[in-house]
Picture 1 (cartoon, rainbow, N blue to C red):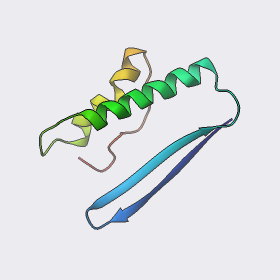
Picture 2: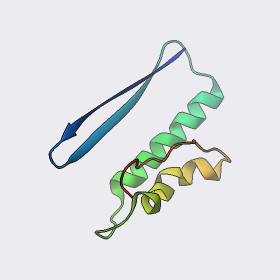
Picture 3: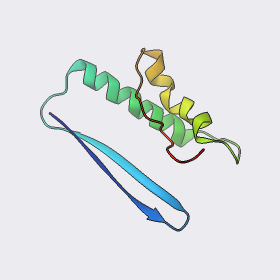
Amino acid sequence: TRYPGNSGGQYRDGTCDTTHTIHFGWPSPDQSEALTRVLQGRIAIDSAIFPEGSTGSQLDVLARRALWKDGLNYMVCYFVGLD
């Protein structure tokens, strides 16, 4: 069973939204593969250097690249509110 937890806060300089997924038991191979691709996307964002003024939709491609390579996707914008 997966348990996604979402939290965040409003700050003077912006908003922070954090999502964690905790799995109770053993994930299926498909779940492991999908969550690994999401982690790879997060690493791609964390290690990217991009110009000031980049929009969320421009950066979203970096987060989705590993998913797209396996024919996967998720239906929300990674950078909600940055455009």
